[in-house]
Every structure is written in structure tokens, then in C-alpha cells.
Length: 303
Length: 255
Image (cartoon, rainbow over all chains, first blue to last red; front, side):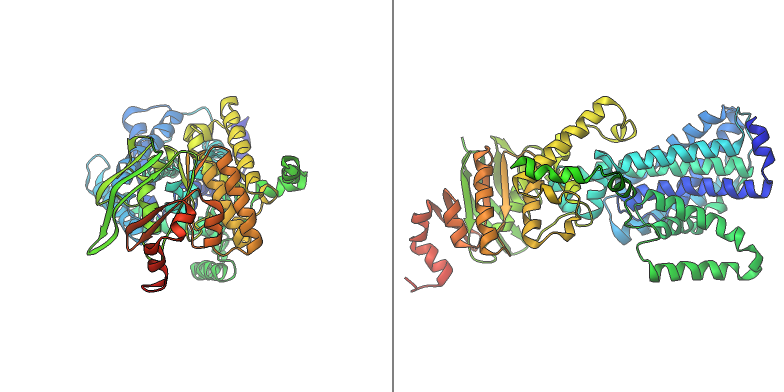
């Protein structure tokens, strides 16, 4: 039934939708380390690459079930990120950004030279047998990633990350182990990037290390900056617009990248916090429902 | 046994000896004030105690354990809460979230807790932290501002919010770095009562402050620092008439 539903959708539209879905997963991942924890990563394409090649190799060499491949690609990428993160997350700001940039280049060059990744020829990825059609799997992962991101943001863990983003000295004086939380945040972020990469590779059917260059990292960053750093709806929104824009602007042929660039410039001038930056949706809903104001009366009760 | 003990604590920044062989004991349950001219090293002593700096020489012990050189998050976790001279709130977050971050060490659930938010154990902990946060806010009379952004509070309110955030650690020792700075006389009076209440609730208070009226009205004991050296230590009336103190503040020949 699901297969029929998926088949009934125009394939071109379906491809755009899946691209949007993968974009959302990647953006939500980057949002955790850059949006929530405030650590600028310019090398997230490398994690996408690690996930894509891990996933492809698991399918080609081991023929694992797809859901297991997805989970393993994410987990292995998270381990790689934790190992890389431990030394480099002591740096902050520009230094960290340059460091992640360097790491991404190293990953690209290594994958371009390894036999197992088929060097510069890249890998053809067969679609593994799976119970559900690909677009539905992407949809499920997107939903799970949104829920996980929202949960993280409203938790003790997420509060610690945001404290680190806003003031490291104050955060540490509140008993927050900064180094540990940064590494954990980096790993979670890379987990999603790895899953995004794995889905990307299997959906496209072909991956090449050069696909995961600097521009890919910048794409992801543009998505969360456009939507509003640290905002889950913002990341979803930004990823949707930027993943779809190149397609919808296709009628402008060679001018489309120009318009795309101009859109970004105008947005940053008129709405520097991103489209949904600073909008607290939970708060809005709760206020509408009248849940929050009664807490404000606590003062009178306390006296 | 003293709650906090500085034993010949010294820190040098290059050629500058910011704190020089300071011996100081903070007794459990007292309000101790540290005063001294600008640049005397008062905030540096706070930074030494909270682990932002490690002492070059000497030892700092808290509850009988040596804490010198430990990282700030460990020291905070062992029960020392602090405020900052230049307010360091998480200004783009709500008042409540600021205090919830302060309550960090009172919880245990991490990433797994975030993802399994619906588990009863996690929800119980969140509820407990929320209750603690509201309790701390009501102690400084800010519970009614819980959902405002910290940056929208007045200067005096921000100082009080810092105290609430530090209280959420449920500290044995509370370090207040110029809590009354920038407050009007009325706000200072309210603050004085609040700090006294905090002490009544069993928290030892160690503060740095410039406002003499405030210090005299609040402290059980006063220590005076000048050029990184402790020059006096005693009850308020003793310190007030101490020639070395008057000289440090007003210059030689002033008395």
C-alpha cells in the first residue's frame, strides 16, 4: 500500500521531497553543535561523507538490513566525531572552525585515495532490500530527528549545551563539565550527519568523496542560519527552503544561483537572527493555552 | 573546622603577585566580607576558590578536602555557588532557564534522559529541578518574572537572579562578588534582608563588596585585602578602627 502511495507521486517531486528530508536531517544535526552548543563546525560534510561511505560499504560488503545499516552508519560517524572532537573542541570560535575545515579536507583526501572507497571513482550503492520504500524511511528518520532535537533542547542536557553557548565561564561555575558536553554534542550532531549521509548515498545510488566538500558544509550552515540558529523549526524550515530552492528556481536557468545568493544576502540584512530565530514555539503554544501564566502567581503563594 | 580555608594562597601573573600568601578561614554559618581598594585582588581570590585560576602556591581546602587546581565544574559540584562582578547571566534565556542551569548539579539524567524524556524517572527529576528553581527564585523575589528573558530584567533584578542561580546549586558556601553594585538604597536594603535569610537557611556567605554601609550592616566578620596581602581580619567595629585599613583606603596621615 505504501509502495502504491509512493509510486503515485510524481518522481521528480518525490526526489525533491527526499532531498528536503535529507537536508532536514543534516540541518538538525548541525544545529545541535552550532545552534545549541555554539561551536561553529565548517566540516560537517566530512561526517556526512563518513556516514555515506560506511553505509555504502555495509550494504555492499555485508548486505546488512537497511535499518541496521542506517543505525550503524550514524553510530560509527558519532564515534569518529568523538575521537576528533576530544582534541579539537578545546578550541573555540574561528580556531575550531578552521580545524573542522581541515578535518573535512583530510577525510576527503583520504577517501579519494583508499582502495576500499574505490578512490576517485566513487562507489555505486545498490538499494538494499527493505520493507519500506526509501521516501517513507527518510520521512520516519526526519520525524524521529525532529522529536529528538526538540527533546534535547528542552532537557537538562540541552540546557547545559545552551549554557556553554552563552557563557562558558558561567556554565562551568554552575558545575557543567564543558569538555564532556561539547564532545557529546559533537557526537550527537555527527550521528545525524552520518545518517543523513547514509540515506543520501543509498537514495542517489552513487557517492564520490568530492561530493562532500566545503560547499556541502556551507550548504548545511546556510540552512540553519537562514532558519535561525538554535531553532528546531528554523532548521526544518531553512533546510526545506534551501533544498528546494535550486529546483524551484530552475526556470531562471543560469541566473538561479545568483538569485539564491541574493536571497541569502537580503535575509541576513533584514533578519540577521534567521527567519524563525528567537521564536519560542513551545512558549507561544503554552501561552495560548494559558498554561504558563499561572506559574507566575507562584510569587503570591510563596509570600 | 573551617568550611573554607585558604592556606598561604598565592597567584602570580607574570611579575605581578595578585594574591600574596593569604591565610583566610570561612567558618560555617557566618557572613564574611572581603573588602579592599580596587585592584586589591578580591575577585582574584574568588576566582582562585572557584577554580577559574589555580594558585601558584599555597592550598585551598573546602570541607577539609584540598580543592586547589581542581576544575571549576568539580568545585561547583562540591557545593560552592558564586555570582560574578560583571553580571554573567545567560541573557537570551528566560529567568527560569537561568536558574534551571544553576540546578544542573542537582540532576543526573543526560543525553539518555533527553531522548527518554517521557520516562517517569526523568519527568520526576525535571519536576524536582523545576520546583527547586522556583523555590530559589522566590527567595530573591523573582518568581513572578520566571518567563521573562534575563536581559529584560533591571540591573538590580539581574544581580538577584545571579544569586538565585547560584542558590540552585544548593551550595554550602555562597560567594557573592559585589552583589550590591549598581543598586539604589532601597534595593540594597532588600538585598541585605535576602542575604540574611539565605544565611538563616544554612548557607555560609562570603562576599566582596565596596559599599561600606552594606558590609557593616551585614557581615559577622570582615577581612581586608590590599595589594594582594591580607592586612586585617576581625569584627566590623575592629576593622573600622584599624589604622592599617584606614591607611589603605585614605592614605597615610589620614587618621
